[in-house]
Length: 111
Image (cartoon, rainbow, N blue to C red; front, top):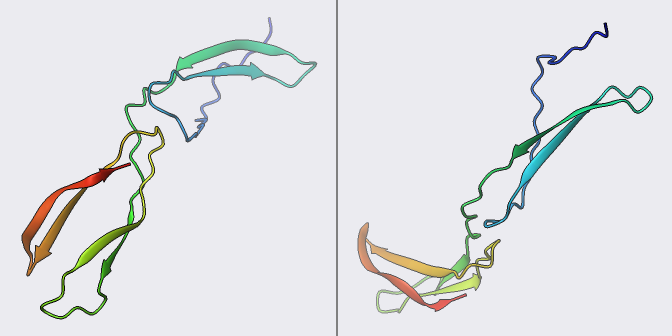
């Protein structure tokens, strides 16, 4: 009777990235002992259900760099966010003055 070691006690980990939402994923594993091309059973596992991937953070610039009390402050998005699934991105802003919320809202620009 052939001797088989069904489980060697090791944990095998596979890591991936770039999984997009609304896509189906599955993983297939095949055992082989590397002897004369001998291949064992194949196991399959349904992959993760990807709900959504977050967008990247925007890069912003506030001017002027050294404002006076009567200067208007302007915040500009210099590098916009990007979304892995190409979802629409809307920016929300909150301005604080002396640790208290001064202004807030949503941007007029959606990417």
